[in-house]
Length: 117
Image (cartoon, rainbow, N blue to C red; front, side, top):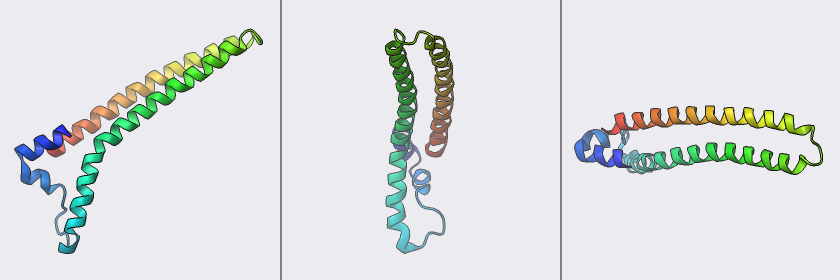
């Protein structure tokens, strides 16, 4: 949102030019402006929701497996080695997902900045 406002303040014609493609028929201009503005405002929200969902899903999966392991450990001690291995692999996967998410976040942020500033 800050990049959009900065772009509108520094280069209003260039920023608004992204909202309306060249050669747009006149009757479609109001609808396109509304759709493109909504899309522009929803982008940061969608990015944040995707980041939160991906990271929360990994944490939840690790928590569920570790809770199940704690409950099953007194009943079936042989399972502990397998579940600890699975938890270790899931933790490595979680770190990899966090790195990829950080890369995607920075890449999209730089694209948004290029578009607006």
